[in-house]
Length: 214
Image 1 (cartoon, rainbow, N blue to C red):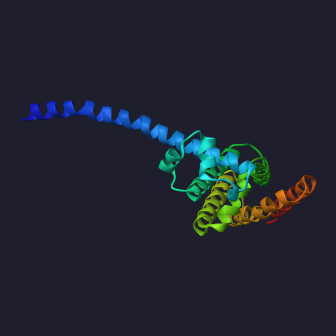
Image 2 (spheres, rainbow, N blue to C red; image 1 turned 60 degrees about the vertical axis):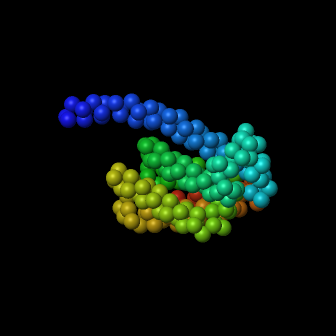
Image 3 (tube, helix red, strand yellow; image 1 turned 180 degrees about the horizontal axis):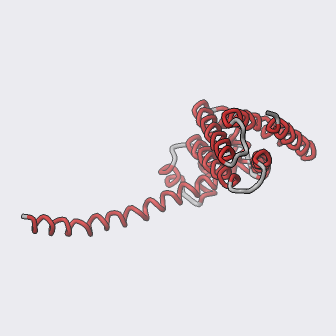
């Protein structure tokens, strides 16, 4: 009985491995398909507003048929939601990358915020996404939770370096800074570039001063 059991188990291994090999390319293709759709949506949003793009346009930009697009996403709202969630992940990674740098903790925060604001000026679809996030209660909750996590990650990392006297207070200030950045993101595209530069510089100076206070 024992020999037959072992023999049966050995016979099953190739079947499991073969199944895993079949699934892996499918999963990779699925991830690649989703990424191409989100990239296409971002590209179209860089040129047009959310209201001006359609599922047909996204499918064409991604090089897919509409039928193939609908296999991934049921509608445009689902694509915008996934694109917003991807930006949360990207921004969280940028936070971690920024904390790997040497330098004064306060300046790292200011530099990170400058980078965050610059992203919204060089990638206009992010501005569109911020508006979509504000308009969607569930996305807004996810955004706030994401901002809280990022604030706590930054504060904890700087506390571990000895740059922070009160980590809890710093996390609160960073959360307020992230929320206030929405005003700068909203204003910048609505004014001329020189004035947008002044708005950004003033905002960064304000947060720098606040971070300096005890």
